[in-house]
Image (cartoon, rainbow, N blue to C red; front, side, top):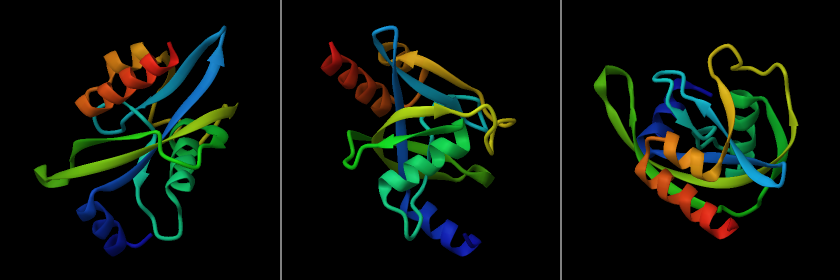
Length: 147
């Protein structure tokens, strides 16, 4: 992707995220990854790209950021907003559409393996470790729906 088109997407602040999940010992678990810049726990996500649908982009990011391959839901399960810190102290308001991803395969090697950590959490645990308030609410709502 060119620098010009990347900047265009960043100005719009539109991102797509995967909520990777698997059933482990009878409990639904979700995978979070650390951000490269701050080490915060986040969902795998990325900027909108021409030619990719939301679920396709979310699947691509889950592979690149966490080494996950899975089955994507076709419709979003929720959304959240946050402020993305950019270079030179710029801040971009981002809207993130979230798509469920049933994890079928967890790879031992993936493109950003050396740049991020990945870890399984319950929905409640995930809500406690993420920083974005709207994402906390979404995770808690999904957890309540599972109960």
